[in-house]
Image (cartoon, rainbow, N blue to C red; front, side):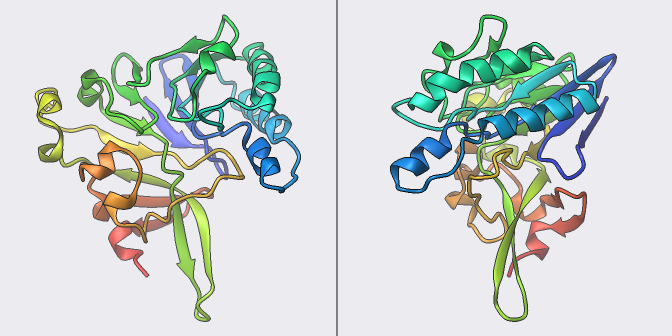
Length: 257
């Protein structure tokens, strides 16, 4: 089994036996409609996202594509853009690859947008690679069986790293986060599923180019999104950080500024 980010792309490639699996998170299709309502006119991002994914699917010979939540953006009301374009977006991609979706907190009504050949999982996630890998969005606790996996992969926080130069100018870059768990902080109902070794946590950067992201080296854990951070389950200070180009920056505790 191999798991590695695709160079310069917020997408994860998993090789298991004879299958190549692509995992992306937080696409937020329909965000441009929300921005338009605020007076900010930008083109729909859907054609660009479809082209980017199609290129990856072709170049990497992908067999399965997983969307780890927040495929769509607008809640509680689904926008006209989402109703109009997401079904075709999924139908076009499903001609190239098998598609599976784990819904996130922005994916209300998504069951009405997906073609019949697209698999929609429950928000508590699923396992792949014969139970070795767990996939969730990250806005809710996963199915307890996911704590029996070797790797637990999630999105939801759109992680970035904030840099500050000598003049005090700040900039953010999307980042991959890889860390371990503090199982003693899990709810009691989940602790029983933990074996001697807890799964390694991998947090994906957002695939969308439009959404913001929390600076993981600036925010306190309780300010980050989802129950894993609210309950202080992730060993954040010791988590490792990589940029999209593969640069290893070190551990979060060494990146505070």
